[in-house]
Image 1: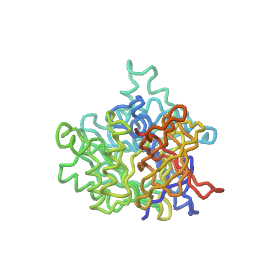
Image 2: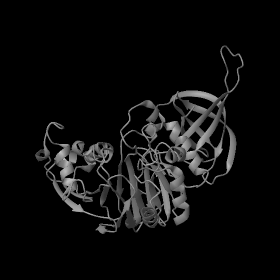
Image 3: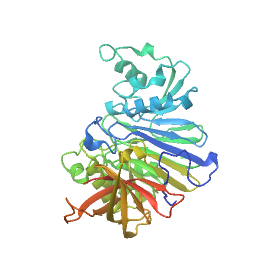
Image 4: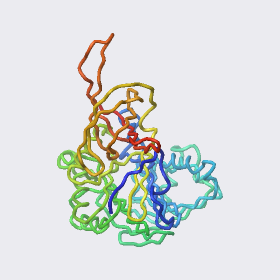
Length: 408
């Protein structure tokens, strides 16, 4: 299945081509960070909230994958005016480590009595029967939280699942498999009429039985969301045994079992945006259809196509400017290009550039700006690297507007 990129400025609810609604599935990323949330400026572009992904099936069912701090933002979205109806999502919790559950007490829809939530996770040998319910209670017990579990008025149902189990959710057939992670972790495969999505975060390669299980889970997936917290070098040395993977391991799996699109997920809290850019660049050098998960990113599957959209807010506010520039990079098809243009919207953080070519989202552009100097004196050109966060078609113009964030 070929991968295409959206040309909309804001997340779209459907692919750019007309596709029957019963063959459309949408993924939205609310939290993409691992271990602990981050708030520093160096991680702003990809985002600092911990794991939370929303999948909407072709039948319209809402599935929530993990309950990290990104869950709070999803709650705010559900409270919006157009989302005021009763909510009844299915929530799959991969495991009980803090970064995958810490958003639960701050998820406002849990405090509305008209809502109903279906939770799925495994029975922990450390917690026993009703493990997830016990996690709820412990998180909100005195003195860790100002109100107890009784404040949550929404109806809650808990279902225990294990590796090998299959569950039916409206519009999706769900398969669970064990992953290699301390205290246990589940990966999930969602098969829909629009395509197959696999969510397999928090997994360390090296256990032959579980490695085989992950290969089976990911086989032929249209979208494979995989743990890429560490570099291959760290994974082989100081981070060995910590329960996480690398971009290289994800690429190996994708190539071996015919994955169509690989999404690097669970970014390390110490990985800056530039570090993730570097990881993405290396991964794309070995496997073409790789994406780095970013907060607000939307991936829409439908009728054999994949649309990817990153919010325009990630490129920063722009101001009028007028600089001649030479831009080089790679097109969506992987062909190198170089062209001259004019940058008319510019900030310290990014720019809007009009190009004849259409580069790939999350690809790198080399930008050489004319530097007029002071009082007309001539200075050397200013060379910058830009990272593509938005591609916008111009109906009345032949050129494409490309939003970039400067990485250096």
